[in-house]
Length: 305
Picture 1 (cartoon, one colour):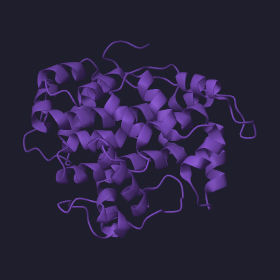
Picture 2 (cartoon, one colour; picture 1 turned 180 degrees about the vertical axis):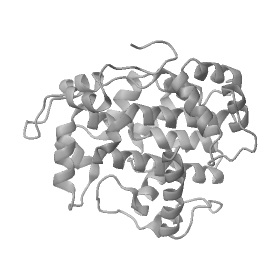
Picture 3 (cartoon, one colour; picture 1 turned 60 degrees about the vertical axis):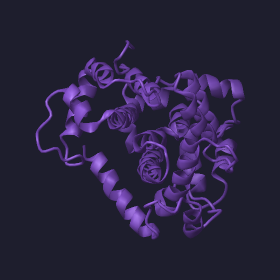
Picture 4 (cartoon, one colour; picture 1 turned 90 degrees about the horizontal axis):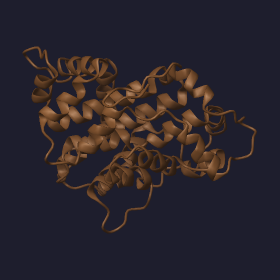
């Protein structure tokens, strides 16, 4: 049952949801657009609390008490937030015992990203055991960590950048949930092959993950600036691109070049060439192995929570 300010509960396990959202076989013809959108519409919605947090990301008038009250309406998320606030990842000397104190300790923008990360992990659930979804999850975390670092060389808030990075590939999760058999086929067919990722997705599903992400975010009423990131992070850079989109686009490419790609692809640019496009004040390591090591440690810290 879905209620205001609560996680979406389902009588089925996440793995059962993966198997019931479609009956398409890997050898079936590509579904038409209407069928694709209908399948995506059948996916359980993102937790309302996380959607609310995403809606608050760019709202300067948001107050700590407003968000902490929202989090407190769900016992599962409240427990998760307190565990994160008291974890070694943030290292507070005094144990935090209330959600409101946790929001004060972590800060408004950080608590938003904590809520979204926790919600995404809950949303994926045990489906993290599925290779495709596991790789999507690690890629999203890598993008979030890199985007957070890139934001230090821009006017974008670090935690806003992190949130955009963690949510930018929601379309990949959507395709995996709606078409699990096709995901398996895609992994098998492309395990040792390199090529254009979006084209391979379109051949397999009938749409790529950018289009799927845009459809899901619009349906879930997620803010337009985050919808734009999901829809256009693979587009070539254009004059006038929003800073959030530019940061996540850089983060996505650096994540792939650092070993966190979802599928093998032919790199259009080397790691060194990607670094040359970054602001001079960016603290991103010059060595891709150093960046991969840093990302791996941060991911391990998050996954251990």
